[in-house]
Length: 322
Image 1 (cartoon, rainbow, N blue to C red):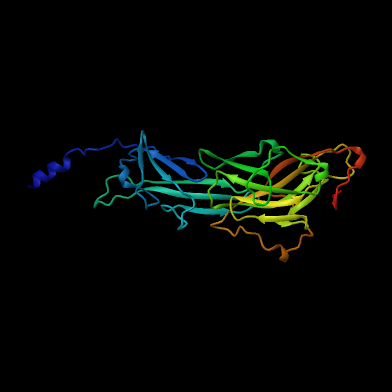
Image 2: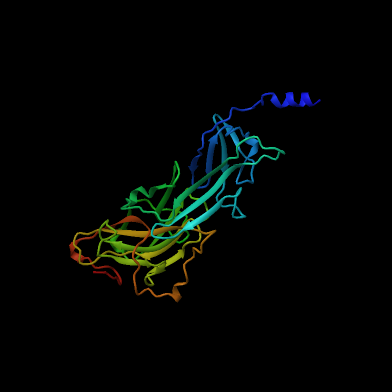
């Protein structure tokens, strides 16, 4: 019997897959999902022996690869198959999601080299859109994610018909001279992002040119607060769309200027890890105007019927920063 046992030990092992010794993982980062691919049969491990985060045996066999998918970045228990997230603050804040694909053989003996494929996706938290033409309505932002792919998010600044924010007005938005002082309803929305991220309007201001750095500017929103009683913030940092309104105006002492450019600094906040809602404005001071630190969306407003006879004066009370 002992000789039979020795003979069995010398028999070649029958592999069901051809072992691969490629030590890499290919990651695709999307707004709502992460896909990680490892070479099939890594170091001899079958797909049912590999788990995502050491939790989920959810791999899919595709030609040449084992594919593992994290389908949701907003799970109710704040984790999906061991996925963790980290917020890195600073001048260019980022969100990082990370996980691993590990071997986990439940048999008594392990015959293959253990594997641990670590991967991560990094998303920027601040978007930068320069001089977005309002007639396009949507500014597309490509964000590097730290891995092999990118994801595309669309930030739109839209004029709506009323405070219900159900119907958008056609662009470009034209204001008749007789309508100066009327209410303008603005909605800023992020599309293609997981719903854990909230759109936060930090600052909004207007200039007589398409340049957000123009020294002639009038502030509408400062540090997420209305600059005066002509501006009303309806929703901010609660979901993927933030809304506000202001009274239309034009700049004084600027001849033949019939366009007002609206600029908004927009940031994305992870509502599951951070407090995204700004502090109540009544408890803060607006004496010092905050310098823009995030991304800027720019919209163009045309004023119709302007001529030199009115010397550029507005209907109603206005302010101009020199």
